[in-house]
Image 1 (cartoon, helix red, strand yellow):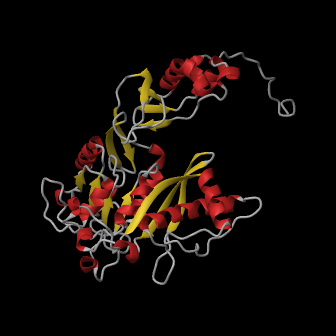
Image 2: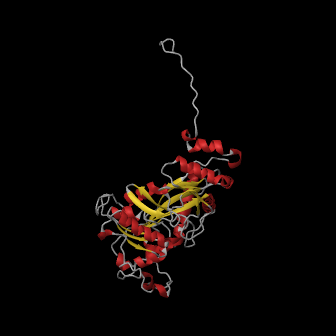
Image 3: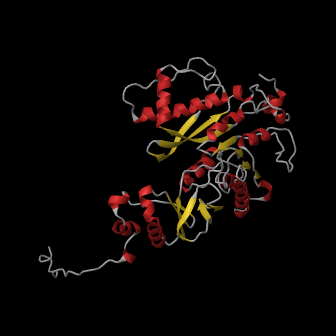
Length: 395
């Protein structure tokens, strides 16, 4: 081709590529003994200026080297941390150690134009849920940034954010005009949520009310007839449209807070709220649900399970997903002590949010609180004498 076109012969040059020419992956491939460490650690979560790694045991002897390479090959990163063990504290705060760079855990994250200030060593944060945060606020709450008090074809919602973290649902929803009551058991999360509301210049007349208490107590206080005060009262009863439980590891267990929480006279003529709860499902959940389906199963009240599909033979991916979803529905029905079957009862909606591990998924279940659960008569203790529950006979 060169001869036919009268072009000169190519000249061979030798170019030596140094450290400055290589990316983090190429450098680590050269430096780490792959026979010992196995896979090269290349992926990490970015939280502002922080790179968060989950190194395997065999990689730990080289953690300083790995941290230094990631630090030097990513201009925006000034701190590299590694999770040291499983999360065991009630606030779901990651146990971290700094393996390279500055020991500076307060940072700023920007998602869809919203700024979040947080201390990564004191609060829970997951950057991988950015799309899900935005989707729920826009599509479900009916909130559009800059739309004032209007949502997508309807007035903006009133929301209970039961486990608000640093505000990834609370702040954008309030920014768009929704009325938000936010809560987190971690005092640092409540503090940063208030800070982030101010940081994003939410108008004074629509600033979310932020509380720090147990999520069940938060729901119950929202339905008390009281005035706003320094004791955590909410000026209720709060007629809310949506409640969010963003605590996948254990949040599903808070669903029972809605059973018997509502006063029929207050909610007369008004639709009961939706609950949106994130949770994890794994292989064990699928197998348990399939065994229950094959055996016929029972509903929460002790009768035969209605219309539960049985899985037989080799399980397909679709069957596995359906079984995982049904396991979540069954757990919610147990907590509410009623089923989603019957006339006038809306079926729950489920969607897969993301794969967390090969046998672990995060899913979202959204359901409208059934009347049978909302107005149930249940036993109460003396400490709840002012709640709607105390107005009902003990069962």
